Length: 394
View: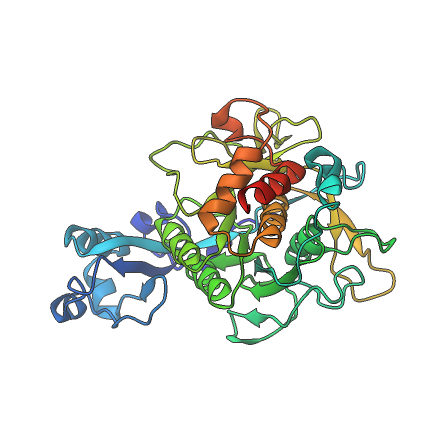
């Protein structure tokens, strides 16, 4: 579910700061090179030496906070010319919304995933990292698919869940096929690595998101799914490059504000596979928020592909016999794992594919359904992608 960012989590105390995005009161940065990371700059901005993360964190000291605002500090760091990026450690939220019941799992017919299963249902050797709220390991439709996970919040091994969002995402990717239960994942044979980054309100930080992407890549994931806001951040591109260098494709939700995003504010990052959402009519998913306002899948030149994301049916967290084991939901949060599932099928055909090769296969096999500014290369087609993957493996 799409959750409103909690203002209490953003340490914003001045009127000038209030105009900035909701954040933790910290900056994320990355030096351009080792030469740029000089001791002089470390002292000037009171920075820590590199920890090996995608982005280092600067929490201003009391002295720094009294002398200048966080924005002034950010601008000074950028003016030094020593950094690839300096950004707020923003608070991000899940990119999904509740929905009413509809025809269950219509998306399989639309993207021909049911026909792709004649070739592969996914290989057990392919691991998909789900950076989310955890995935219920003992769900009746996910047993044997979810491996031991990790909480980046508590920094410990943990397979608990904070919201149902991650379990829904995991089910879209890897719920069992043919067991006469409620779900069916796009790539039911692959394994899920649940990496928990969100609290019970469905919120997280950009730092946790990018640390999660790195951890997924380091643990051998071939596909890394992020169904949160924040796709426009430069640090996401840095994390995506790290993943690609490790052989993993970063799949990221486009967001649910229903906006035509500009090139300036939403760059088309080379290492971030941006996924928009479509409805059962193969049109951009939209919804009404008021008499004169609406939301839906974001669009613009940054979109790589689209996938079904309206009234999808998948696994739900449950603890009591009376709790619903399945539910429906809408959002780019759920379009992203559909595309991630297709990517997992492609990797299952040939685990030696690079991230760029997998992206190229999905893009080249997509069904062209409209304007590229809205639909990117088109709506994903699992059958066509698997067939093309087999051709390119020869």
